[in-house]
Image 1 (cartoon, rainbow, N blue to C red):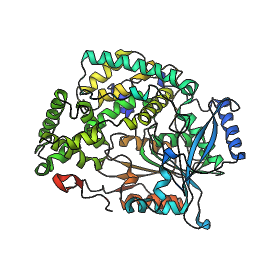
Image 2: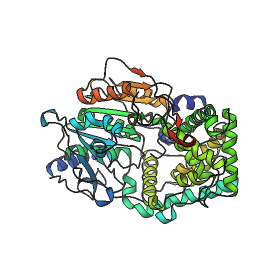
Image 3: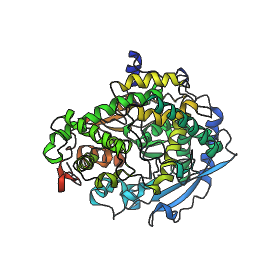
Image 4: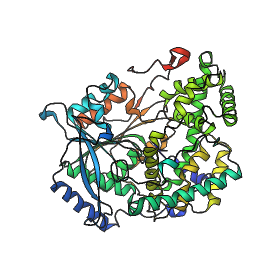
Length: 541
């Protein structure tokens, strides 16, 4: 997942801590954009009438029978449905249960924006590891499991901003405290990246908003001959689902929102990224406290402050002598960010850091050295991330606003602030018109059935306040909270309290009469040589 965003922005803005650009506020364009709305109807009708043929998936997907793939045509510009079209690659595994038990297709988006969901049908196959197979077994019997590459991603008219061969730069410096020279360099890089996006992506770049992706989702629904959409979205996929629910409430049958982007338009997307920086600082503190509790295993320090000192020591060492020539402070920081996203990464990251500080750099270099083989996909993913976020809303064009807000924030929350700023800075010079954020609201009586929201309390990528906000905006929704935990993407965890309720909802449509708070999954427990593995892996709780 690319930096999945948002949250709690409203209260912070009111306090004057963050600044969102005035242009990000405005009327919801959905009701005003009649041409695009009409074009979406035409495109869906055309897709329903077309003969969607499923066959072998492209070799590069590594998806083999019984999974099949097909292509769905969508307009580049929905206001011109008869104009230029692109094709989206869709993957499908048919429901394994009897025909009488089939409940339609379940579409999945993993987030990003920029993530490919083609792999989703793999979760329904019998040859995957038992714990994952158990999580998805009930859904795989009842639903055709459907994944897809959204527009601009992978096999669906991929866009680009820079040559993949020029994308990876390693080793990279510590991103937490940039000098004036670094800031000047990053500003130049961001301007070049924005210009490169237009040069390498062409007309599609101006039609990459979440609204465009939501219309695509409805065309895929129609192409599959489904009267109603069943949808599972994770991270940014929740925002895509929320916008779809706002635009097409009567087309929804079931929807699960896992790790929720805050849909408040005041945070889309500049203020959201600033708010995310605060949450990552807290999550980084969670890992340091955990590592301190396991000091006998990792010898990184018996207090969070001492663990921080160990991390800083490693950052200084790598600045002087990058491990393997490619792993510098920036690469170590990226590993720390992954640990802040997902607590299954706590054990391997602690192990890598510990071994490096005690004279063995091999685990760190194996994990953190950039893979040239992934450069093309990684660059494409980042290009889509920028195209969607920069296109969804206007961002500040004045560098002084970025300098002021991020400098102020980094004094107290340095862990992720400037790294996040550099990722998003191309939006300051975005070369195509930006839209207005959708004011997602679906009241009672709009035709939206009850939907299910699942969220951990300490998620940094999509903080908890976002789930509360979406809950308020989607009438009749139910919220399941994992208490005291912070991993991102909860459906991958084997928490019966949560998984059983998701299964029940997908199979019956019942959300339950009340919101539910589930006990958190056990924190990772180091085991194996030097604590290299997590004792909780594969266990239900």
